[in-house]
Length: 390
Image 1 (cartoon, helix red, strand yellow):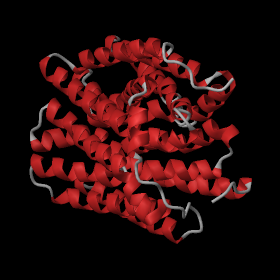
Image 2 (cartoon, rainbow, N blue to C red):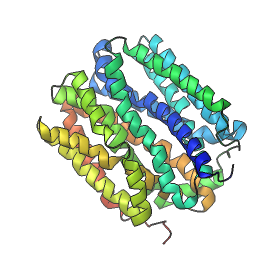
Image 3 (cartoon, helix red, strand yellow):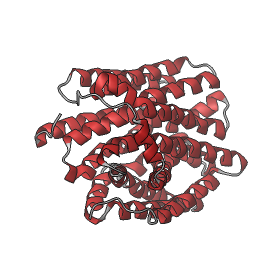
Image 4 (cartoon, rainbow, N blue to C red):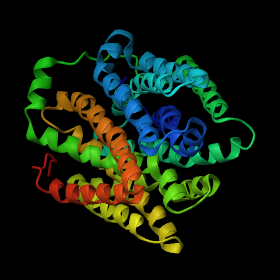
């Protein structure tokens, strides 16, 4: 699929953003549900935080193997399959009666959801001209930021009438219907993906810059998904809010950040993606630590609202830099290798670690540790050799 007209490209980009919104919401919706699941199943903070570890573990293996799937059925059908399979997994979560079965099904959710991203990003690269790549990625990145807002609002609205299992089932039905609609539409790339090239993978894995980007993406994902995952427990347990108040504040804190990736993409194109990436991590790390240190009141609300404003600006510049690692043909491979590892560490291991620290001390202490790591990562990013063209 070549470069389309602006109107055709924008319509296809919006369809992809809608699918990404549902894909992402299906994973982050467990954050506002955690206080209810903890209470119903008698879990501690570490066990609750491990939900994201199992989702991220499935996501890890799925993205690594997504090239084999798209090589056989093409990028469009891979996206459709991911949506339908994710919806079916959400429907099955209502039948989980133990922590073990819940963890296994969450792992399957990660497996299904992870197939989307590599094929979605390839499709975007066929829609958007290279000069506007960061801005094209920024439009796509509106989807997860909208998901951050929608998940707590959806839970707050529906949990008054139905159980958390039925909330997941409702979302599953919408995912399946949207996946079918995308499959029947004229949008999407019908070309086949490429199975991972072992020699190219070896070349990337020997690059110090690649591992540096893995660290930075892990911290970037922790600054958004990892902190978001544990924020309801942080607000309920450390600050005494009821779950409804916590979910309302969580949604409010993400509203202003919905369109921030658009600004972040423009700034990255204008001033250099590496400079923007480093500055974003520095500021986000300091705000994350500060959020954990301020008392209840206006300053807590300010910090909770300000932290995601900067955190979400990481990804347009991050993806633009990652796509330039090595020769041009390595770009999609770099995404397929870096992102699953970063999600596993930043979106799985870090929430679990924060939960473990919460059981021993407080979730606030875990947030301070995460904030310090992000700040150090921002400093470290300036030491990575730049791959941007002048």
